[in-house]
Length: 88
Image 1 (cartoon, helix red, strand yellow):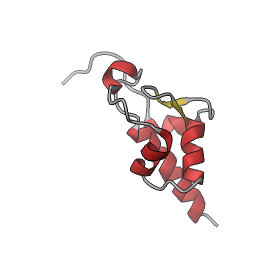
Image 2 (cartoon, helix red, strand yellow):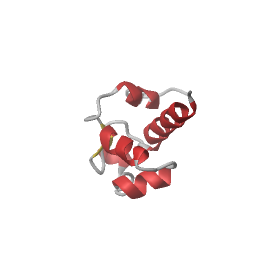
Image 3 (cartoon, rainbow, N blue to C red):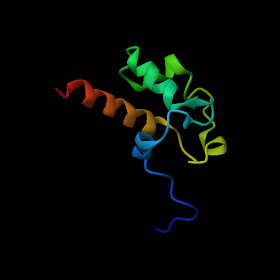
Image 4 (cartoon, rainbow, N blue to C red):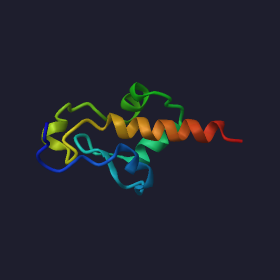
């Protein structure tokens, strides 16, 4: 099986991106907005979607340069935040 086209970036790459970086290209949601939602209590993908408006358009393959949904990036940010909460 061969792939054509560029490989989408690793979802964990968002962890090193600036807060102005778009996480959800379809709905214009930045990393900073996702982090603020997490800080305000979002603990799941659904929580982040509800608080930020991410993942509403559902046109990822057309609008996102990653050609896929941003859920993987949001989950990476949620995992990072969870790890920081549990680290003494």
